[in-house]
Length: 513
RNA sequence: GCGGGUGUAGCUCAGUGGUAGAGCGUCACGUUGCCAACGUGAAUGUCGUGGGUUCAAAUCCCAUCACCCGCUCCA
Image (tube, rainbow, N blue to C red):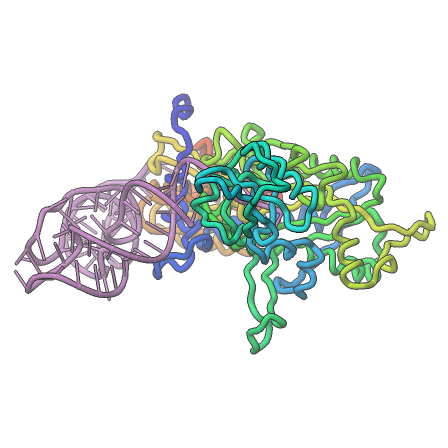
């Protein structure tokens, strides 16, 4: 172990192992691949499922204890990918994203391109500064005129100035434009479509009335069914609704393996609370979720909590307890971190929006019988990425080790490992294969185990090291005499002899299920 | 979206206009006595894709796709 400190984890090597062993492959590879889409091979499918099942178990089946010492109440849900298009108007995903927008890199403001007008000085030779303002905004226009007056030392209220819509200006001239709230020229980006939702048409007619979207987040399915859950499940605030499912974003630049994909899977809780308890529940979930990632094998050295700064907060979270990201130090972000899960106080924004857009208004407020109080619950949302979590598990597990034949092994937490144990006859004769097969049959009903009789024992160990299999059970000559097998530990390479009847209990103890 | 780089067998790569190769891996048979042993045999490629130049293209030209790096983006 001494010199492993020098052996840094290289993302190319991790990607290569994922390909070689069947964790992750590019989608549609035989057609040249498609950018931003990834398939899970046999080992990857098991790994991701183990992650999702652990989440489901620890959130839905066996939720953590709340501040009162009793388990918090969480119910599951499974909603559709395509929803009524009005959902995305209510959520704020459609507004401003069907029109080209420009960003001001100086001020971080964003404007609709067709709402900006640009003042130019007629006496200018075509290379001087121009000044943008927001159409119909008198204050903004006055500001632009003042800036022009100052720059060219003329009175812009009387002098002849040109007014041009921004879309009519060549992008080459953007370097001359001073943004409506900016002080320097050249900080406006080109107009860009920010329609990052995939769209499709429902029904045979392809027209605007039939346009629908693939959900860009799973959360809205929960919000739209909140009232049905309340009406049918006898839940009382505080309680949560949990869901796993695919979401889609037409990212400008998919990058970093599966980290930013266009199709991805989320594991989300929307936890509904009384508004006065927001800060406490926000901290509760932030800390619980951080601990959970540690519990499935990510190391504290590579995991951090980071609170968002004010100007970073999403539109639904500008006020309130805040947002924290649980971040992992991926090889491609190191020494920085990349987001695994966001824990956000979304206030009552979403429920209010749906109440408003559905036209039902205040009738949709939650009623607390006990307190005789009517209100829109606030929401604390722990929203995790299943694919990012899987990627973090892969990166964490990847352990170079030149001392072993495979040069590398995958140090998965036993609960996450795609294969829990390999079962090998030391040699393929003398009754050993039969004993191995019996053991395999005894274990396969409970655990993902693999029986391998091919080639020599060293090669089989090496294969299991790259698959991240924590235990290898070998049937040898002694087994036939005294009914014991050896169990090899993936990490220490040590072997212990265990009675063949005790193997299942041994695995149960180590895997923790 | 912009700039740069890369693309030959499952992997690592060689091949600069003239018959597509090596090592490893994979598969079969034999062997095997605890960490990728050995022997014999076998399969595997529209040289990323499409077009062009040429008697002839993996090789030269154009386009396109994918991946990597840096910007940009991430509601």
